[in-house]
Length: 496
Image 1 (cartoon, rainbow, N blue to C red):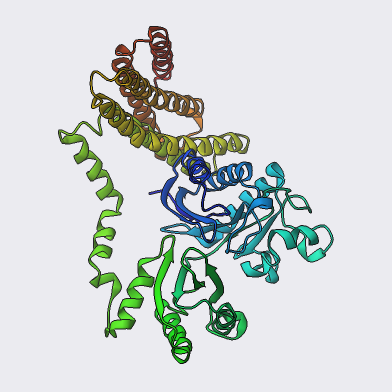
Image 2 (cartoon, rainbow, N blue to C red):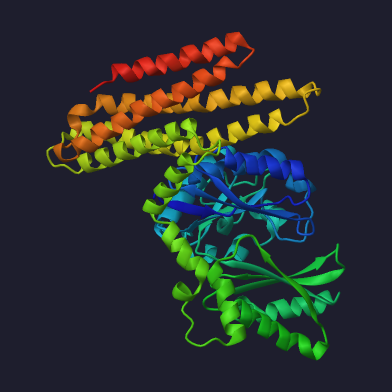
């Protein structure tokens, strides 16, 4: 399995659903991105988006959502309870599975540099990506918010950004890009309207006020509920747990006879943090999370590459309409790219390889990585396109929209395998050029990669042909048929 990172950009918009959806769609448009959660809050006027992305495309995805947010959000007209300095306010990269915090730091630097250069938004690196100690703390970076930073940037040496212009973006503000470990965003609603008390309470319990370690806290008034909320961030939930925060709040609230009316977990929260709360609250002795949580045991079993491969093969074997030949074609293409990456990577280590050939081989390996992710996306896209056609078929026959939607779905069902054929053909062409540079020890893998890509082109072509037959737009049908025949011809010309 390739490496993935978690991305949790926060946007200064929590009310306009059209804008929020457009930003989320920008993330989905990047190969390999899987959106996990969209948490929007009207009182905070803020949305927290959580997605995972392959290491190769995570920085591109963060750039894409930042660009879209900058187009849609004007901080001059933004009002909300949550502190903010940018349209995309904060953009952290978080290691998951096999990725590392060091890799996330590099992603933060790459994304930050591009955002500053192409979008003219000043970028401050924070947390583990920070280049100075006073920028590790997000609250210090964001101090003064959009309006305060606007008056200081360009004047104060302390507010010179790490990337981008030394001036505020007129509508998108500035942003913090960083790398961090998992945190817990935890809000507690209080049965009071006393903001002065809440302000003192927040200062007392947070780390900067001498309270609990690894805890940020901010008082917020919820207009929609007519009550105070204690918004907290557990920056290290192993040092300060949810249970400890709740106990500390209860101790401070009791003398005032203020009750807790409810709590909120914002965005995705790690299972460990919730399990730790349960274990602490129940006072369970000698609890072993890795062994005694059923879902954890199952996840470990199912996350192996063998299990994943078996699940897909079994899904192909059943009589359900999807996945089918189009998805199988995309899997073949992705496997061909992956095998090609491996063969190139090992060949590049060879001391016998001509140094002059290495730059082109490295560039090809990067291109194969990108194509692999795009082909992996085609697996799900192919199934989704068939599902879209079936949905159109359910429209009553006397509805004039039925035919229009069926034709649109059929067109999309042809375009996905067409993309699979194109990507596989491009990958195959690249591998064909470097045949003399492959190390003898991986030549069988190299050849297998090419065979997989040839199979992908052939299988994808069959799916284009059958869907093109049903298109009423014959000119378009002939166009894509001719195009896929071209990819077939190029695949045949690349024979070993």
